[in-house]
Amino acid sequence: MEKNVKYLHWYSFWDNFIFFYPIKILFFAQVCGNLVAAMSLFAIQNISITLLEIPTGCLSDRWGRKWVCCAGAASMLLSVILYAVAHNYFTLVIASVLNGLYHALESGNNNALLYDSLVQIKRKQDYHKEISKNTSLGQLSLAIGSLTGMAFVFISLRAVMIAAIIPAVIAFVITLRLVETKKSYDSETTSFLHIFKSLKYLLKHKRLRTISLAETLHYGLNEAAFDFNSVFFKQFVPEWSLGIFRSIGHFANSLGNYLSFFAAKRWGLRFTILFGVCCDNFSNIISVLAASVWSPVIKIISTFCSGLKEPAEDTLIQNDCNEQERATLLSIISLFGSLFYSLCAVLIGMLADMTSPYTAMLCFYILALTSNSLFFVALKNTKK
Image (cartoon, rainbow, N blue to C red; front, side, top):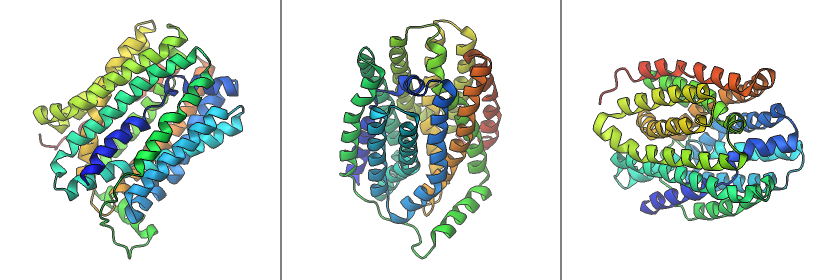
């Protein structure tokens, strides 16, 4: 179980060492020929997540965390290979579906694996510390990967996609070294009943229910706008610099993730989450209003604040989940975010084509402010 903690940290690093994130939307647009088709691939990916989210969470609870993690890494590897060879929309659709399967398999499962591993070695109180380290390494990897990937941009956008195959192979090999945790589910319960019990638990638990709704709004609106950042920022900075700004943003997010544990230890989970989400939303709006070379610079502040919030929020959610349906509950919560993101991804592309990237992003970031009040309601009675 101790090895699991170490391997999950390494997996988080190599799993996120992907070179193409800063130029993904640009590569899609290059192959597809228009922004609506390009953004529809993000929607297809998230529709796949939506359809597979709960079944894969149930699979994790019933059959084990390790092999679900292995299957997720294998799906990611196949997805990256297809991206690299794609010359038409149909191939990109298949790759996006596989990428959606990867996210669905990992959603809830990997964090549940870390949590269960710590419980079994009697280190449950260290979860916030370890998940902060885990997500921090992932963001650090994204930063280094984004920066490294920009070297391949001078060759072509496709060269960036091809180079991403190597870290995906390493990530898959690491998952084979993981150790399975002890299962705590009721083996006599059918999959349908297992899902029903998880939904019932979520609906009855007020704080878990409200924070899930808040995160759905925050994730769907902000993530759709975040994936559109490259289209907006390239009006003010050279295309080759997008990876540099993206890399600095991931460094900032990594720092936020790392400091989340210390912030919560000093001021509590409630303050850490609320401070992070409010600063994230407001700095996003300011970055669009600036509409200049300062826009990607201001965006870095929001990525730091988002990093500060995420491990604290995940710790609170993990503590509110019960043991038997942990991965399924996390998958259901993630499902809501994926559904809403799928809608937002298409809408922001349509709005940008009808008006401008500036108007589309500003509208989405303003709407994201609605999540602030829901986070306040959810955490109102949470003690320090």
